[in-house]
Length: 78
Image 1 (cartoon, rainbow, N blue to C red):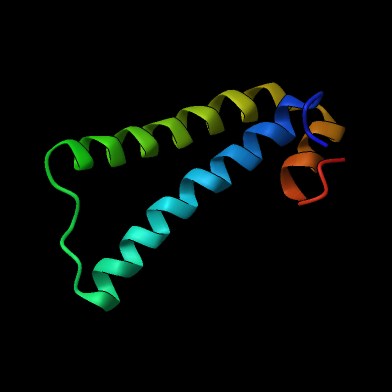
Image 2 (image 1 turned 90 degrees about the vertical axis):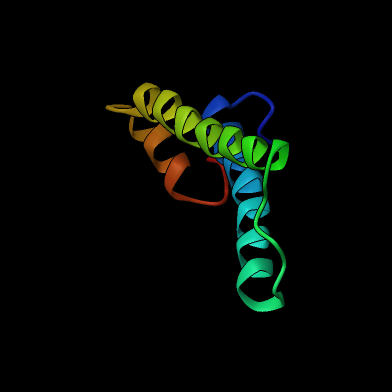
């Protein structure tokens, strides 16, 4: 569905990465889990940096392109 549309693929990948962060945050907040430390903390920071970097790259390419901007704003990919 998104294999030929890098904007939609970027949005899907960012959502999946954000899902990991939200699950960790909810586990810490409601289940009393320990926050990520050491290498797990570094991994979480890399995921956050990847989401930001992907957003910048995809957003920059989509700026000014109505179809690409619409793709980023919807869940349908087109």
